[in-house]
Length: 441
Ligand code: SF4
Image (cartoon, rainbow, N blue to C red):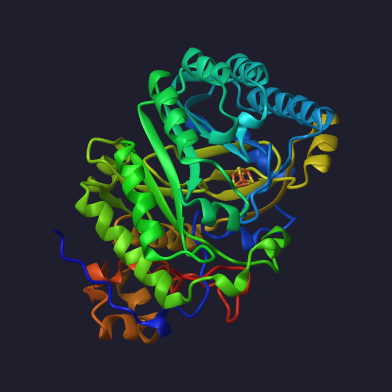
């Protein structure tokens, strides 16, 4: 058994911190960087790119969900959204011309399988028509509750090889407490179907810190996921922020585990998965040693983008759909978040960029430092940054969580659960009391 003890220092976790799926974070986006900035960046793009398509609909809305999604029960609204998305595909594809080669296409949401398999095929057709594809890797997020044989057939036909299932927990009483009831048998059947459909990398999203949850629940859910043969597992802490996400008001806040219990669940979950043969990827992902994500982590090729930890090395990620974020080396631009406004803008054949931030050389450097801390556990910060942040780093160094030597920062083994807090030291945009972010564990 791997020995691993994470020291618990509540004072170092007290400050809410971003997840750093980008730097600067979306909290810094402003309307002065919108459609015009997006168009300029697309015009200047060439070479390898990745695409992300957002389907902001689900058949049922889970109470805990932090995604930009709505109920898919109004067919006309969904159809007109897909028309707008198809227009955007054509518009962005024309701006990029044949200069850009698409290496990856990710479908996320919401639940992409809230649309029909036929609608999905039409989207893939539109991408094939308007972009230059370079044998791209296709991935998709799926709601197990709405998987059908037709969907499985289409995934195989289109050549999707990676999928991610929203599971969270197998415990029926916890599923009821978070408004997502899906019998374990359904997950098992969907797993078999996806394997038979050619999915070679299958991820399961799980959660700790749910209302009424105890370690035994986390342990049982992880064990069942391992037994299903998960290639990847993401183990997230539930973030209860009902002031930002009103749908979370249905969750019984009085039953939520305290910070120390959450910390223990994360630590024991980490140990369980490492003992089961998984390689840790960053602070909350795990992958089998043969999986490309584990190999990227091992060889220092891991990156962080809006989808979390990734081996995607493309310098440009183009986001399509409402609320999607496009990421270029010198700027980040988010599309209209509201699906109605998004449809309206596309009906006028205009780019949907609405908010963003320009990244100067300083931000690009700090972004690399933050990404390296989170992905590699070490970063060459240089003497100037080490000295400027000596006071903030001191408590982490004093407790053996971080080492800074000759301008090089290393997160020591016990410091892993503090990685986001350590990274936040280098984020100049973080003031005190940022309620927009979640607990560091
Ligand atoms: S299925 Fe996923 S995206 Fe949809 S509401 Fe539930 S958690 Fe959110």
